[in-house]
Image (cartoon, rainbow, N blue to C red; front, side, top):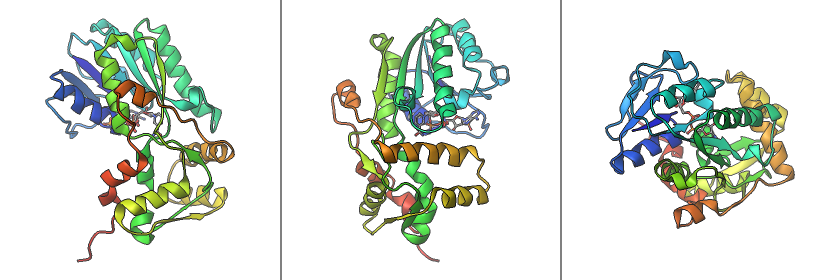
Length: 283
Ligand SMILES: NC(=O)c1ccc[n+]([C@@H]2O[C@H](COP(=O)([O-])OP(=O)(O)OC[C@H]3O[C@@H](n4cnc5c(N)ncnc54)[C@H](OP(=O)(O)O)[C@@H]3O)[C@@H](O)[C@H]2O)c1
């Protein structure tokens, strides 16, 4: 039995699906009583950041997939609960910023503190230090649908975005095979792309032109706050983009080494998601 924390997220959902396809039993924690998950996953209702809110977990947990965002400051508490139910190993969806700092320090510090709690837990660990997810570009969907233009700051900011399916495949290998214990893998997509490239590739996947229009960081911050987003959202985004405009984020071949096939490209992610960016037909 594998315990997935953050099971309704992009990586978590894919991992639940892959584990189920491999014939493994999964307990998937979500705050949402209406959540539906792939395979025959046992849905366990609760908030991972308040482990005492989690309904009874099944016994016989072998390993845990842990989302730092979902667990918040409660990693130690949650892992001691999992250990009491048998867990011996944990795979953490950490961030490349732990070893390649970018953006405000407090965001990287959260991932560092989760990694430290995992080290202190006594469980055997694998850290997946991920670059930015290709799926972050879904935040552009409303403006692409409405105007075909992405308005943002730091168009030159370059990263190697990773497809969540590649992260999930690596995570599942690390959950199933204890040979990955003690490794901190820096996982990125195969190509460094700036924001203009990403907008163009989404356009190519849709068969139309999508361009990037440069705004000042202050304009972007004001627009995000006007939409009601909490201040942490522009802080997280603009802080890291400013750094990636000065020096591109890392690119590694770790996905290819671990999976024995090339990492999925941003163009492939865009093709998978082209419908999300398309303007709905009128009427
Ligand atoms: N996006 C990136 O570029 C990036 C880069 C590096 C690392 N990461 C990390 O990778 C992990 C996986 O990301 P993901 O996008 O697949 O999904 P995620 O952000 O981990 O979300 C997964 C699920 O966790 C629950 N959750 C989210 N916020 C929560 C909160 N404050 N308290 C309690 N539960 C919460 C939600 O599930 P329910 O609503 O069903 O409870 C959500 O669907 C995250 O920890 C993220 O920080 C992301």
